[in-house]
Image (tube, rainbow, N blue to C red; front, side):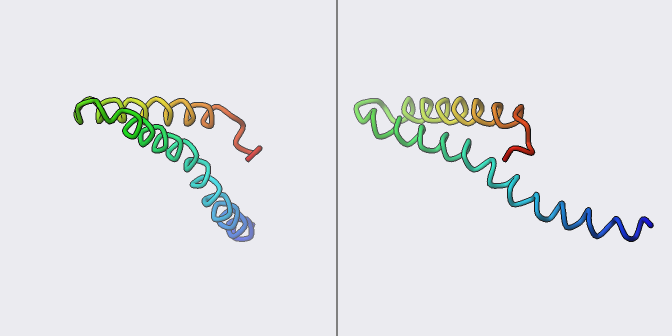
Length: 77
């Protein structure tokens, strides 16, 4: 009986994998966009401060989005 259930679990895991990966593209994309906008919007600031601001923006935006997705119900998409 276990042999019958195993292929179904493998298929379910294979179908769920792309959805899980795509789910994390939004937080990463949002963080990258925020970082790029910080760099573009601050041309008069020294490069090291722009880099620091971009990293903080990336971590903050990505972290907030990822935390929201992590706590949401995963079967709702």
